[in-house]
Image (cartoon, rainbow, N blue to C red; front, side):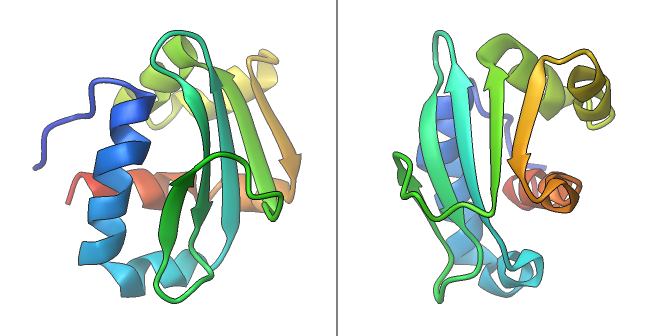
Length: 116
């Protein structure tokens, strides 16, 4: 198993792009465009395009997301270590999903790729 990212910046700048390059067919199975807006220390904004060929992860909001995830960095880290935390955070109002909520349920597939 790969080492866990130290923060969201490390995840989206290093781990996700490496996983997309290594497993493009798995990423394309998700076939969606996400925007992650992680606030706080170690956070930032990234667009993860799993519908393009090849799939890509770029800093910033490309304005094309089908699902946008907004969360504090501390809560995001909790989600990385505990896959069940996302739903709890959502119902507590700490995780905001805009766009297609069904796509948010596929997020674990992205995280799993970075740990393969």
